[in-house]
Length: 69
Image (cartoon, rainbow, N blue to C red; front, side, top):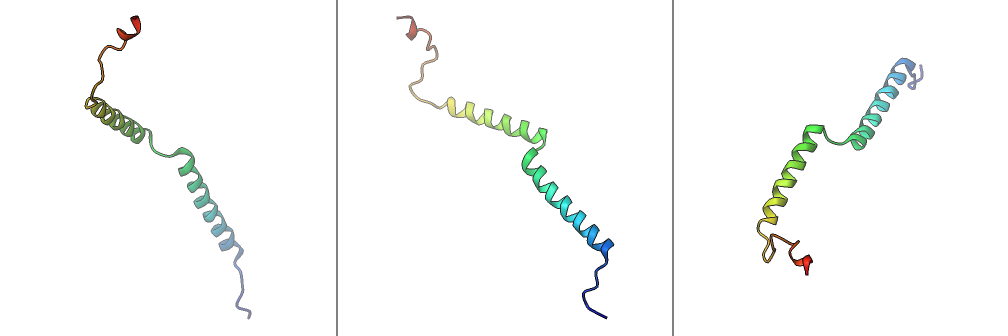
C-alpha cells in the first residue's frame, strides 16, 4: 500500500481548524481589547496626564484674562 493515503474527513476537519485560527487572529486585531480593559487604560491615562499637568511650571490658571487686552 502507498504511504500517502489521505483520510478526507481528517483533512477537512484540519482545514476547518486552521481557518478558525486565522479568523481568531483577524478578530483579535480587529476588535482589540475588552471594553473593561479599554476603560481601565483610559482612566489610567487620564490620571497620569493630570499628574503631569499638575507639575508644569509657569502655567497660569486663568488664560482668559490675557485675551481681554
